[in-house]
Image (cartoon, rainbow, N blue to C red):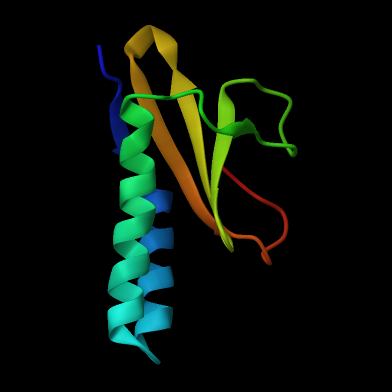
Length: 98
């Protein structure tokens, strides 16, 4: 059974901000990056544990996928068969907050 992939309000805000910022100089690149980040997130429905553990947290259910320079940070909720995308985080940003 596939996992349901949901985006948190913070993740939606992150994605909107990323796309808006990049669109200032290249609308097509912004659209492509937004699609790539969403496609990467959808992969988690089949393979929720494919990402590595997030070093900032000591929790095996908080994981990340890398699409340089971005990190797709998510939480696996096995009992609910759900993957919650917590943040789309640029690697240059400090202090990851969920």
